[in-house]
Length: 156
Image (cartoon, rainbow, N blue to C red; front, side, top):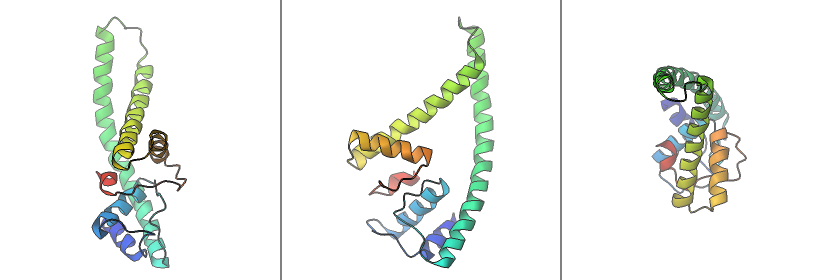
């Protein structure tokens, strides 16, 4: 994370700076590491581009290891509980694979809804724009047509 903050410091600043330098630093690091990259803060110097490229490569590797370890344990516990529930319920013939698919879809949908509510209430966007921004963010499509005015929520 420190490498990302240094890279942002060398990047030549954003188009607009409505928030504090530290909040922008953390925002840039999180948005880059999650591969969203709204385009409101971009590197301008050669050294910044090199550092950010290294940060992205190392960061994705570390992010992948962390998520893999966390999710393996949590999903195995959840799967065990769901299998026990399915075995003890009247739905014994329910496919365990379907449970995992529905669970994954449900979690993604929850993140989309939370993000849409956040944009609607804190950024005062329309319902459609809030939903659109949430879907674009979670899918990391990055059309660069919307970004947040505030920075604090993005790294919470």
